[in-house]
Image (cartoon, rainbow over all chains, first blue to last red; front, side):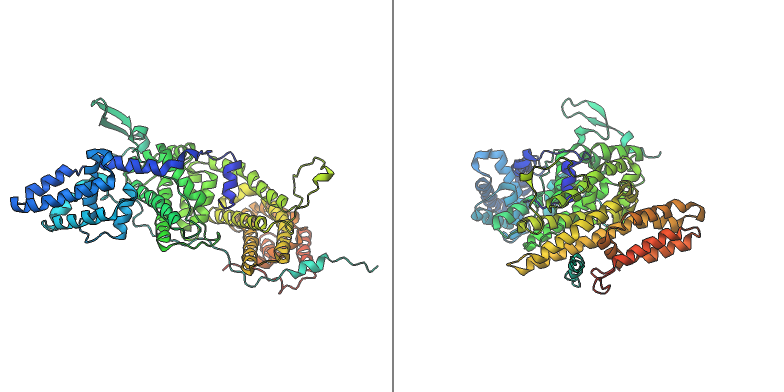
Length: 199
Length: 418
């Protein structure tokens, strides 16, 4: 339950605010998730580009080994995204897994959270398989090569831009209750209220 | 060539539908990105894993989206801020429901705390950027247009400004002073809004009195039916109701104080509504009643008593400090800063304020304890040789008489701020 607040009363009873209707926002998390999926589909880094990158940079023998791992990632994506969402969604899911797991040795807490936020609950075995496969693929490339590949996705997301206020010193200190240990137990007022009948 | 303000800037771009080149104002709804900000909900009161998980998901979305927003170039940032309703609702929901430090203590998961801190900073930086009309030499908005943009789109309103002060005023007071100062300077209509808000603030005091079964000014003049006799008082109401009233009072006093502390220029508007007098008479009625109700009640858990007592004491102190900020800003500062010829109206205002509260003995005593009235009167005596000594003597005598029967040392309820 919302705590009673002065500004709550001002929002409700004064005419100086925009009276917002928040009822339609009940499903905002669902809307947000689908928006993220849509964004993922628009990413500059596609599954085809990953395959081409592997093809361009490895010899035939190496490629055959890596190809199995690429299939593993795609299969994991199918299980995490859901086969019913179509090939395009599965491939963008595979890109997402590749991006999430490159440079990671195992599925950690952060990775689990990121995947869950994007796709909801998922089978952990699929994530583990995708992580191992990504790790094996990555071992064939230098860090620079992988960074250049991943950058394709990040540039679009604006991850490299400078944040406004980056250098502003921000304090987390907040107004708290004042200390008042010395408060008397309010005896004096009771004394004053007593009425004398001694005329 | 000097850079144009954002509000005069035109962009030429290819229409995504027709492929033809077109010219658009830099501030145009079509430039806004389709982002869908989610609403903020406060951390769960208990460590329920599913509630924690929902909080984390929601908060992470907001934190990511705000970081994305803060990284946008100047023109895109303003298009998003003006035209994205979901962003405005998200920011408003944070201000409404973000936990204040003086709220009831919650047992928060460390991960929740960490994310909450990230969010807190990002929200502040977003409001900071929104209150800055000149970001750099090349990125700025015409001040008058900026004033219209923030006002007409409700980017800032009085409740939001009050929330900002209570949430960020302690550690970021100087920045906040600049932000709010700039908002009111570029858009003086906020002073009118504040003026319009004051009756609602006073109504909050009246509502508290009414809930405590105390008569308040402006109460209905209609005769009351006998069977409708009010029987609920602070002393006999259910404990939960008493807790709510004390929480409400505590929030109200702290928020008002935080606002006036950051933006003392608002004091004139407050005093237009005789705020000092209204505050003192509210104090006189509500505080003894609530203190007595808190003391006399039987508690199964003594920590509830301690918490209520601490809150009511805090509220008392904040009310007295609000009164002092008002007196200081409306009367004392102008006297200290003005030349001798101009100080008479401020002295008169001081005398009137104190004359109006002389009957509020408990308030007067508590105020005098924290801010001795004698010191202020002495300042007036030094500033003006033509001071009406009869009136000042009358005020000082009334203050002295308010102390009658009370041991001053025992009355040292609240310590003066450093």
